[in-house]
Length: 62
Image (cartoon, rainbow, N blue to C red; front, side, top):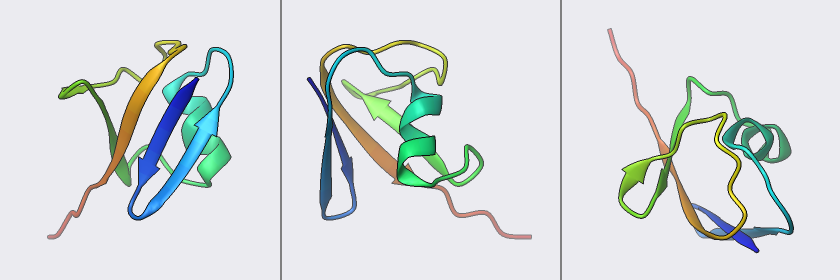
């Protein structure tokens, strides 16, 4: 099971899921957030089968 923490919300996914699939399921864009697993950035195309992933918002200014 993969647990995704986004703010104060918690989502669970069964089976393998990629970062791209997580973003799609949560309605987020790749440019808006970072995915972190075990203290390291999660490659968007890497299938994950278990663990906890944190969604970190990215703020960009110009």
